[in-house]
Image 1 (tube, rainbow, N blue to C red):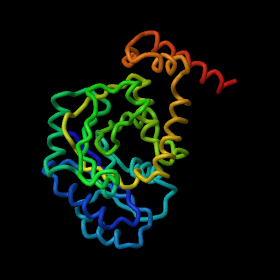
Image 2 (tube, helix red, strand yellow):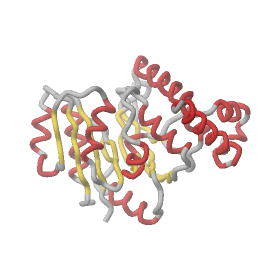
Image 3 (cartoon, rainbow, N blue to C red):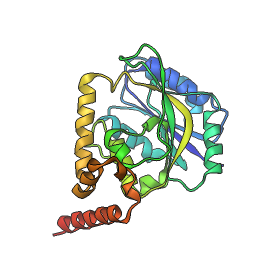
Image 4 (cartoon, rainbow, N blue to C red):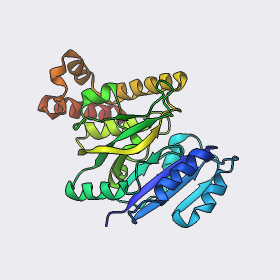
Length: 265
């Protein structure tokens, strides 16, 4: 039976944390390893964690150095076959959603990342929740202007062992770095065609945070994607699936070899 590690990070969000915990501990699927990394909250969050300690594999409450430092602390404790990063304030769509995901993985084995859809809540630009659908195929063209919802993704632990943890120098978009690297390394993605999480959009939707997020995405894109690939993607929409063509794979390989050579001379 596949083990699913769910990692929740939290800081002074007791109401959101309680909703998140409730959605995890109420799952019908039993092989879940729940990890909570709290950043030293003072609002009663720790009391909520203690009330649910029988359902939690590991928890800690101490200061951290940001979102991805906290996630990496949880990652270091995880033993699951697949990991879900479910931040406080986000919550699973139903009590049987992990069971459904498990059955999907069994039906479509051999993928590195399974990504689902999400229901967006608390969007300052909309008074109603809305379903955000993802494409059935993730391409460079898609990632250039979008991202995969982190909370609605089940990521293989083996992929973290290959790539390492999230880069903590990126404060808002390190999951984008991870997904982009996975595409460039030709890892296997599989779309789960239904909502997995209710995603609290209130944090990233502030104009200041969103601008910083876009700036980080641009820096990550420029650091990983060879110029020749970027030019071809921009040239015409017919290149949206170029990751499948040998010329693009060759350009990426040459860029990797160049970066390796440059770093070792």
